[in-house]
Image 1 (cartoon, rainbow, N blue to C red):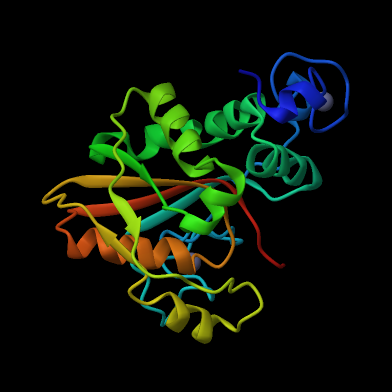
Image 2 (image 1 turned 90 degrees about the vertical axis):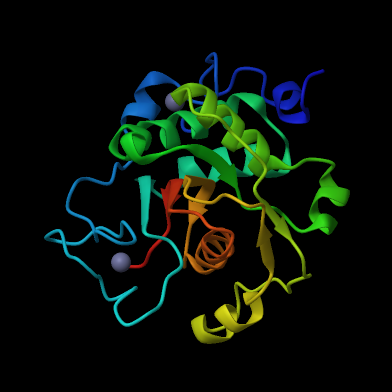
Length: 225
Ligand SMILES: [Zn+2]
Ligand SMILES: [Zn+2]
């Protein structure tokens, strides 16, 4: 069954609108603003020189061991994510999964299983889709890693984009629980990394359930200069 977006945008590139197979044409895929090697070792935020802790995560207890993102958030990425998240476009999901998969070789030797951040049940009820599961499953398939639903949301959380960072962290505390994953090195896949608060809290739950390490891989990074 075709998803809505695949009907609305049968072959249009999320970048330039030309007819293509898949979510992006080759030219727009290649011209996405990639994040290079000079990033914060912890959260992946670009910095002029690679640093151990950037201003975003210095002095802050983050739950993951390492986070990486493939490209900087751009108008093309925004369109891709919109089609993926709200229209259920399979071709856009594939394009995002390919971006995530590019990051996996860096962490592959220490990865046992791929999982995703469980959405609120309201969200699934509204859209009928667990888009995180679709993205994680495709990214895992691209990289031959197993995928498992390790996280569940145990508490409703208010949308927190407008809260200041400290409040946001407080609002998320205890929102997740994880299946037992003793000693496993877990990769959490998501579409976009903004403040990392949700990924951090989900990682904390995985660690509490025994995860040996948690790496967060996202297609895109949103940050202010
Ligand atoms: Zn294009
Ligand atoms: Zn950082």
